[in-house]
Every structure is written in C-alpha cells, then in structure tokens.
Image (cartoon, rainbow, N blue to C red; front, side, top):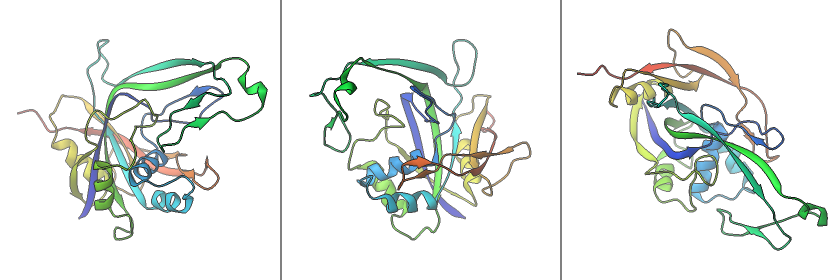
Length: 246
C-alpha cells in the first residue's frame, strides 16, 4: 500500500488552464501536472529560476483528480464556466502585484503603452476538486510530509491556477493509503457523502483501471527551463461512484 496526500481545491473561481490562444485564457476540466508542480513550488518558496527543482518535482509527481458533482439551477451536475472580459490601460509607471514580493513593471518601448490590453480569462465557478498524489521515489526531497507542511504554512500566497483564485479553506484534506492513484481516489470518494451522481475522475495511465474508463494523451507538462509545455502524458478518465446512501 502506498501513502497518498489528498488536497481539496475549492474556490468561487478556479482556472485549470489550458493552451492560451491569442488573448483567450482557456481552461481544462482537470488540473494540469504543471499547475500542481507550480502550486507546490510556490508553497515551498522556490523561485522560477530554480528550474531543475521544478523539473525534478514534476517528474516525481503522480496525481489524479476527481470532481465533486454539484446541483446547478439548470439541472446540470457539473461546475459552470464563465469568461471574464478584462481591459486595462497601463502606463509606463504602472506596476502590478505579484506573489513573489516584487512589483511587476511594464517592458518594451513607447508603443507598449498605446491602447488598452484586452483579454478573456475563463474560469470554473464553484468547483471542488479532490487531488490524490504521491511521489516516486518517495524518500527524495521534498517528501510528501514536507509538501503537506508547506501547503499548510506556505512561503507565499497560494492560488488555484490564477491569482484571483484564492482557496476557500485548507488545501491539505488528509492522507489515503492505496495501491495506486485511482485506488486513493476511489477510497476517498467512498468516504464522502453520496449524492447519486457519478464523479468524473482523471488519473495517470498505469495507476489503476476501471471497466469503462478511456485512455487519452495529455500535454500538461511544462519544461521549466524553457518555460513552454511539450510532450504527451497518457491518462485515463472514468466515473467513480460515492457510497450508497444509507
């Protein structure tokens, strides 16, 4: 049996970012491996210049996610999506807030101050996602215990995908013993109240199987040295059922 750390990602707005196209900041249904890497690294106080640390942590991470169904007003059972239209006129002396403690200033020539910045940022509304993760190898630094401690007392403010997406509560939900990531997700869902809906789940290929799951390839690993995403990671998706109501 392996030891898995379980996280609860919940916020009024959550952004599980995908590939940005022009000024469209799109989202995916599940958090990316790179997002969890960045979240943990931020809690540990790592700087982005420490690319070797980021790359190694991402290589070691084995994570799966299950989405908690919600009852919507329109009868649906998944989180709503919304797009935020953002416009900002930034001058040469304007500075932006950052999580690393230093203000961010504008770069470029005089033309960079002509006209407002227009962009669309997409979000999940009122979503709760449960993430089970472990590390391979488990005894290498940082360990799961060190990560859990850092998430409880982070070096910098934490957010779920984008800076406006602040967690509504403690990220560390608990620990789960299981043979693989899917087993940890199944056991955790069984411990939560049932609501009659299937819980959508995604986990790494090779970390458990369901009779009706499907395999796909996902590009969600960041090269922290070059700053771009690339490659393909095989994952599986399926439905988990909560325990029957008594």
